[in-house]
Length: 292
View 1: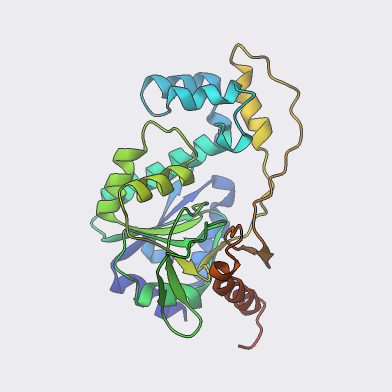
View 2: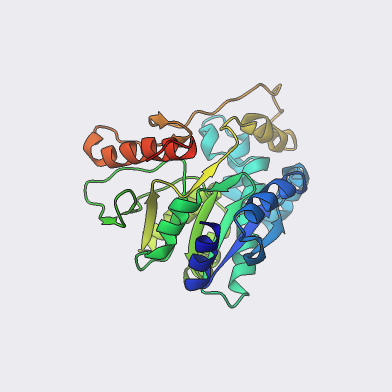
């Protein structure tokens, strides 16, 4: 299977870009090496959120990297927590933009971006790369998606299919064509939302050909536990609004969960989500080594 995965990457001229903190670099490199695709990858240093403080973000606002209205949400009591800038969200955005710039400067046709907590399911990745639809962005992994009765489905074998993307969230694994990467870079700045919201909005506004993989070919190995509230308070601390005492914060994404994988949020459209529910169960059994 690993040799087939490498062949699939070569066939579509894809190169893997991993954004990794130094403490997690060894783990993701070992994973890629186990799949024999480490020679077709580049590990980029992720932006450390500990470097993001009030003064740093103020400078980002002045040079056009971060929108002033986005920064002001850190001090807003009305803005929902998920719409406020935090150290982690800004560091994540800068890391993904670095990956986009690196890819655009390359000669490869397709860039696959992985976060350092991503793990590839080789069988589903081969299915995803063997016959991808004409695309601008492929969400190989994601944590939440909106359902739509109008979205087109594309079957690729008995257990794998693509679905037109609506507004997928999380960017732990995605593939992008180089022209689309250029447009994402041009339209992303100044940052006004978390980077996954930004990319999804751009894709929708520019009518990108975007698809989600069902089941996901890339999953995250870390939990969804977050220190977002505390990180927001660091940015508030440098503003005129006094920082409150940091308190623990644990986020929980909406939607049913099957094993380690989130379904889309249906809101009454159960039928539209049913195919993913069955695929997610299948994917979980595959990861557990169950004979299919």
